[in-house]
Image 1 (cartoon, chains in turn orange, blue):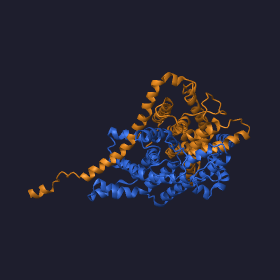
Image 2 (image 1 turned 90 degrees about the vertical axis):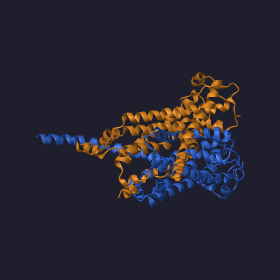
Image 3 (image 1 turned 120 degrees about the vertical axis):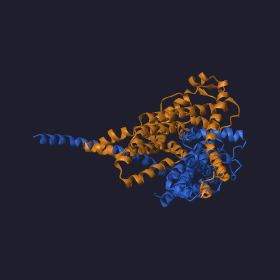
Length: 305
Length: 293
């Protein structure tokens, strides 16, 4: 009896080395993304640090003239930042109302079948490469703006911004729609029971209840606008003039990086290091925008069971 | 008396509310339409300008300074190579990471929480920043040079977060009862993952991976930064210089000669056809094999 009971007790399982190796390999896969982040930080900030030893940080942040390739060099980043913000502003003017409107329609007004067709169709828009949007902005939207009497330059912030806005609509719409669909239907039915119209339920119940997700969608849209390269490079131009006038050419940070990186600036020169300094600025800006988004989401999140 | 008063009030209130509702719906439809109208205009404009240039010359000739004999063969080939390499690199690493996070990692450990946050953040990093990473480490640091392999690696890192997120969702959708059943029969963790969880999750993983590759193939900015904006007249090799289809589009678009803009439109048609086919394939897979547990 006793021996029988003894043999029934489980011996500690022997180590299966195959399982251990597999666990390690999978962990190694996961390390690739950590390495990517570390790589990005090192790749951006080491050369940027060298850059700031040659060019003062204050001169860089407050300088209003950007001319790194001229004989009389000047490294004021303000024109690039303003250029980026002007393009992003016009993009948001399109993307935020249209994205929110599309999301409200899909979530509150469309039937199941309409939503099932429209949502993938909208996502097709998100699958169009940005270089194609850039082509469209340069060869169609700019001439169109001129035809309707808006005297824009060949390269201008307006057409780049408008097309970029259309590009961002699916991002804003998709995330906002997810947030609205997650609002429990009890809330809607309660409002209907009190005699609300569909308009009132949508704007006074669903949108406020989903506001954290909607804000996150807006912020993600803004951060995509800030980082977008090809539309700005093709349609907004490469002239870093300090202007808020959307009819003129501007240069965004991303466009500057692409244009300079494509050229033949010698490695190690201060012009070469501007790529990394501007890249670090862009990275920090998108990081701040994303952090704001996470904070806002936490602050306004409504938790339903 | 009071009932009559109430009904009068309702009647006087109603038309205004109805009109408001209609105007609101009109606004919603308009905002939805702007995206589709733009998409339609874009496609029509590109077709009008470019369809006449989609011919054997475009497919088989190398680029040239003469628009009549200029083609995109090296760029098309490079884009196809990139697609194959992307699948080969992203799927194992992306699925491996997803398995690690979903099946192996202990969620309470700070390291694993940091890993998740890190992947979310990487998904929001602008693509041009990946280009800088490639320029600094692959092209200059490792001394790989401005080669196709460097392009494939940098696009891999770019879409890895997307593949990881899609694969995690697919793995999470496999119900725990399947895992528990396998464990009850004495399977090890890897046997459960490899023989039960992964087969059930493959449709979701495949759909997500194809969509990610479709996105990566259209990326231009990171490739420009690692030197794909060059004149290539010969077929690309993995360790040789290259230019890709989106870069070729950019290159032709910025030339002042309008004939090159038409060539760019033709190349856009090719690129959109490739991307649409990939998207259609992904949607087909999703509808054909998706299981509801």
